[in-house]
Image (cartoon, rainbow, N blue to C red; front, side, top):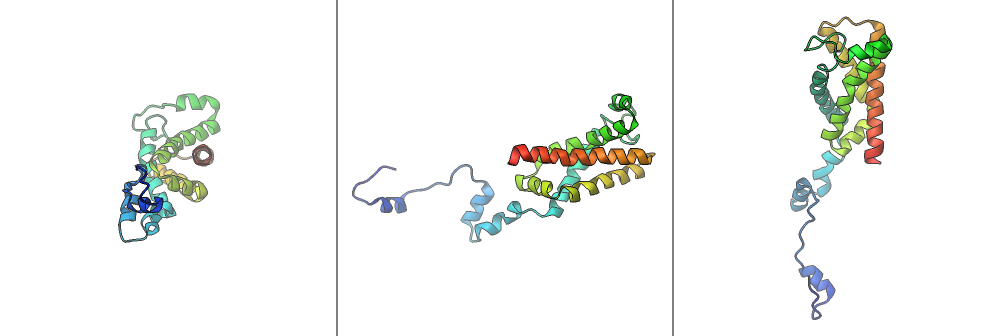
Length: 180
């Protein structure tokens, strides 16, 4: 915009053609252009519901968990019939093997959740980590039981500890470096 000495700066400001900055998302632009209040349009994204984040996390975990079974069987359940990473994990002893298998089963879920979820959703996941991850760990174990796994209590406990520690620790590490 060129400066015209015949007009005041305020008049030039009022008559100037303004384009929205390119970094604004399409949804925010639509909200600004529509008749609704901008906050109401973006409120669901800015304040996600815990139930929606949980459902999204479950879907991510189903897909990533199935893929992880190719690398490390969980409680004897594997699509390939091989032992995968269990061959190396078993050398560390049964409790450590169970904990590492649980960790392996959840590390991909955390990474994909970080990539797929909106920052606000991941921050909510961090705030409600116990309420989000413990049920998913328990649901996973029930699915393994229904799938025919032979579950010993020591494996159950150490697998759960490894899974929960990885899920919560991974979420904390990602959130600490990415969002703070």
